[in-house]
Length: 217
Length: 217
Image (cartoon, rainbow over all chains, first blue to last red; front, top):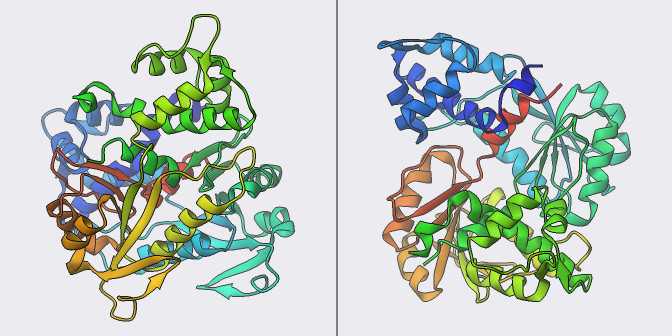
């Protein structure tokens, strides 16, 4: 029911607010204004206020938001107050980079701008290469893709990251959906189909670069 | 002037239309309707028509769009009818994966859903690791980051892909802006600042995963 009420575009901004409020928390601010949140995230203060009122009245008129309270609320809303286990399908160059990216982000010292380690964890990977299966890479065990459904249950996988080549992307996604996964981050440069009950985000680098070409001098 | 007129959100959809129309072209369709384009891209036919009329009247009422003409127009608008040279900063795991991703996408046989090879090419990479500098990886030479401005000119770099760790991301972007780069794709999980004249897209995987957590069961 909650899902039906919050527009996707707002859900996409919540992690930005969380990042901002965690930064203010690290700098020991007790209160943060919608203007400060807007400056940090690149949004207008009106947009910030509008988005955050969707979840109830966190802020006080003319005072601002209680930093720790807002942080807790945002983490709860995003379901990041408990561990979220992620499965990675496709352990080629991109898959390995994603594990590193993730591990690095978690272990990196907190600087002004760095993301805080959070509860998102890649806990299992899947591939078809016999040389990879059975190995453990940066703490992440690699299984055969045929074990996806079984391991999804065993490891409590909630999100699947799809890093296989384009031609296998749809079958992997179908496999994940059958395994009960309801949130998928796709890297393959293809348009994929999922049921309405499944949320699919695409990090399609080709599309990103193509739209950037428009702005290149 | 053209830039001021087309909203960013439409520019972001243009590569989707291009991908669709290239697929129809491969399947030797001569005419494509807004409904077919909508089905392929996951948009409504009304949205498709509205977006495409921004660039003039490509379609004919009740008939549809000429596939080859629309393909050419979209490529021209996105400036993909000539080579677009991309520089990659940060040649760690992610950087290497991006080169592979890119090379793979270009050399992969065209299937129903695969992206066609296009004019976007990573032609130079930059790092600070002496073990990497001077090497050539999958056809891409690696230079010291201090050579960025010089090589940007020499190689005609139009887009910069930023794959350095979060704590160095802002300085790299500042460096690229000074070198005259006007379009940047950032992978570092940080909020970066660029002048109004520079277009910055972020492929922030942490934010993607955090917003997906909201939808995870």
